[in-house]
Length: 184
Image (cartoon, rainbow, N blue to C red; front, side):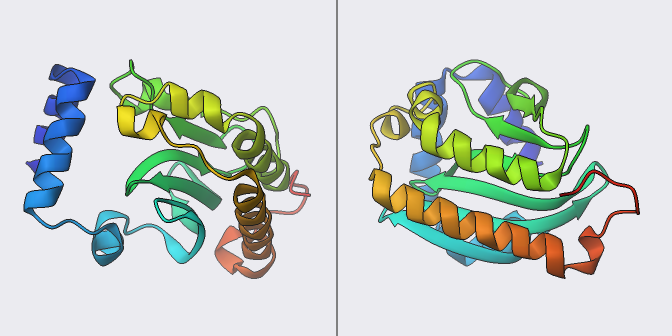
């Protein structure tokens, strides 16, 4: 019921009203992302968090879903997931960005052109280091649009998260792919 109410509110309310209502609801419930992370994101395994600033974190984890498996990244700003990258390999790797328009997951999803998980990890680092301002400036919430992240701290977090994602590919048996795959 809660998720359908959320989806209806997201679809029907103007962005400013939706985000203001969500922030009010979070304050009233004393919402803290880290306290409820596992319940909110049950498919995320071996979460590693890299701080970029007091209000921004880059999360890296791995997951196995019916639509794909592999390492993934989430950029959280003000406890809101602004970008998520799912490095699931050829035909399955994609990422989500929240724009002022677009109400469903299908409208926020963009597919990687890169075929292998490793190439997709490289693309994540490129997107975060070179195109992050583009995504932030198109976010529906003005508070997110106002954020400016320190380039040096972002580079450090991206490098560490990319290294961790590659380590997941090498060490997690569930992420193993059949012989002859494009993983590099």
